[in-house]
View 1 (cartoon, helix red, strand yellow):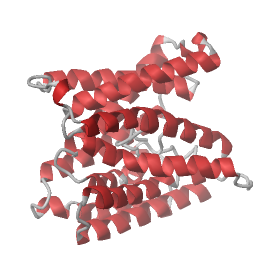
View 2 (cartoon, helix red, strand yellow):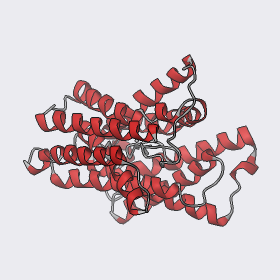
View 3 (cartoon, helix red, strand yellow):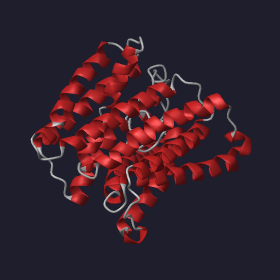
Length: 327
């Protein structure tokens, strides 16, 4: 999951990931407009980069403790984004009142510590492609959370929920059969739920007006939370930075620069320059990219539960997104 503040589906929790999970009020019909080359380029960045973050996390956690990795990633990304915001809009753009700062911090803890941090931990035992497919169920949780809050997303959305839950059941079979640790599978399910709660909360809490400013504080709060949890878990004991592999360092740098900054900026720009329904398509493209990369680069097995469950989940997300677009 990758991008915190405006990530409607993923975010995914690899990133921050962030898969959609936009509130219903935001996913409305947009006026017809010509899709420019810049929009397609931004979409390609979001599709490929966010889809690749699950692979990047897998490389990172090979030699870096999961919560320390997640925490350091988002602290660095948050500081870099703060510099960019101050440079583009002036230091005053980072000023927020205490109430909005608290809201952004809470959302950051849910999205980054709960969502991304748990995905990092889970990927020590769960294949990256399976983790991405489990996270793709986020729109299902969002519909259920909106219903619990008194909204009525519509029959199409509920149909997508039923289909998505069926896909989720199939995806848990590798854990139930012993092919994958069931504990890791349940961690990713919990990560998706926390990411969904954070996303729905961000639409209801008083947040900083500038989404980039909001993301700065979300990243910093979530990153600090990750470091604290990592220390409480004792991840620092016996950890030798000199023993970290080159692959893990490169992957961590990739997640900071490409996953948390470039793709996030591209997605934020998309929300202003293209129909939200088009931007939200990353929710069902990212898991496909993640599965393909995991298979091609890591040789992760494509078992029938992953193929069938993945297809069902992607179909469910397509139904939910298309329903929101018509709403």
